[in-house]
Length: 141
Image 1 (cartoon, rainbow, N blue to C red):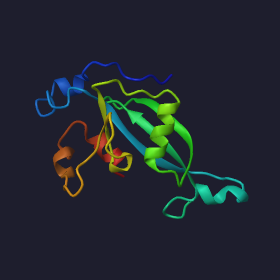
Image 2: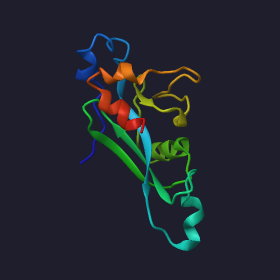
Image 3: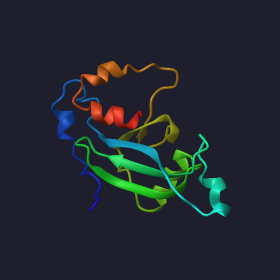
Image 4: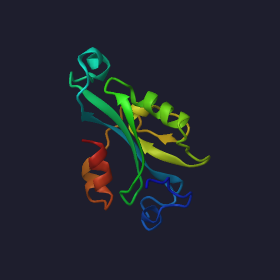
């Protein structure tokens, strides 16, 4: 069973002085991934992603303890991340007021999503020292 996290500050954030109190309202991370799929020949076009592969787009939400708390798996590979997130919102995925998720730039700047600044170089080596490096590397593959 997949459930959304509670509104409390995650323990992993509370115990780290580098993250707390700056990220006390974060609930986890949102990202998309592509899974290879087989579809009938007449439906190949929409399922072709930007790399030319036939895929299905998944949106996954993960907490700081690396637990999946939401998965939406129904979009064709050509669907934009923002469109998939909008569909998840229509289907009941709610980001509580005052809380947010870490998202990649594909989701755009919107209420409840903290995205990286454009043009800023982030150093993965710094995150590699972090106990949360698995989240950073998993979503940056």
